[in-house]
Image (cartoon, rainbow, N blue to C red; front, top):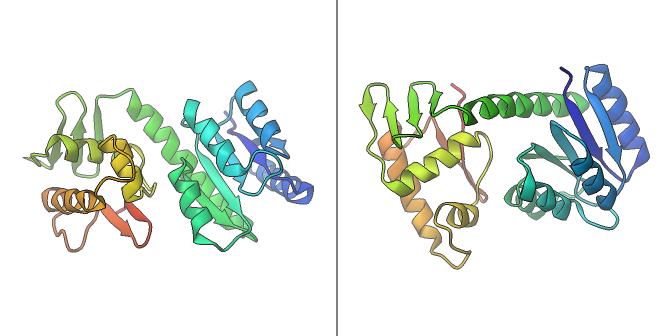
Length: 230
């Protein structure tokens, strides 16, 4: 079944070009040209991914992202014409799965979308399962255990919560603030060093060489993310 995409941008030429190119690859597309229309169309329809411009008239792209994320886990890719890293970081912190800066290479965009949709499908299947396997790592959601091969990692409750969050959102970067808010249920006033300490301990328990991680990586100046790539 063809994947349905919602393209949100206030520039008609960009929307027209994206629709044509993506439909050539077999996607079904709908479009919206401002934030209000995007929110209305999203909740009236069913989409597999949202391609969302940051700068929109009316409701901005980040607020649209927040509204969608309050009720849906559908993948969101932000488009931005700015080079300012803050837009990129904010887009990810407010629930976006990825971002790409204009002007972009359409082949790179298609590759990103394909990767995100594949990951979303895989995670959706895993959400109905009580066991998640990533290479030689196995998470049991029922027993709250993590096995590395035949060895149990012996994680604390918070370490397991963090691990589960990472594995269910592979490739997504989480800032320290976002991890504090999600795992510890506290606001940004919490001690950010708590996150760093737990990441270090988690790496010591699941990585063969914590100094050269294979699972949990640092995106300098942004936060941490988990990858299932060899």
